[in-house]
Image (cartoon, rainbow over all chains, first blue to last red; front, side):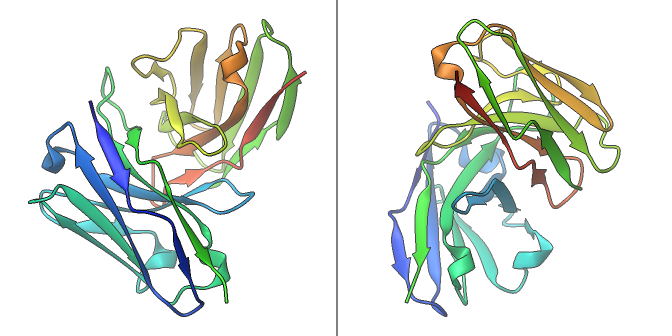
Length: 122
Length: 106
């Protein structure tokens, strides 16, 4: 079955950087986009970006451009999110999510990683 | 695109039927999904493209709506249905979630 296994929780100081990884198994990694979604404490989820594992093309929400990088390694079926110049506002659980498919055509986040808590604190 | 959910919280009993709503700030056709979230767990998709039931999701969940107004209906609440529900629009970037409806046991 599909599995997305994320890296362990991180504690970072303001101004630092973090990389969160997402290792895929149980399907062809290059067939489906991987998205990144974060959820800060007490808030709803927030979509951040996607990466096409086949080509490496990506799309980031405007607010993250210049501060987030996406990458993938097809040899290990791993997608990674890099977030730089961290502030306390970046404290959140970060999820990777794989696009569909569903029973019929349409967009959905069909499978999710278990989440990675990133805490930014001095 | 802003997604506004109502109510923000709801108390109900096992066996009750409930309707959760989500309103988009502009027309988005049928580009809405519904996700269930429980503490410490990743979100789980229930409905996508406004009305399509994801595989493995019980048929007591159903979705409807088009353009601005969308609903998620749970026909007969089960104990495992309590949690927070979010709508998500995938019509335009950035994709956006609603602020959630917390469904609590009465």
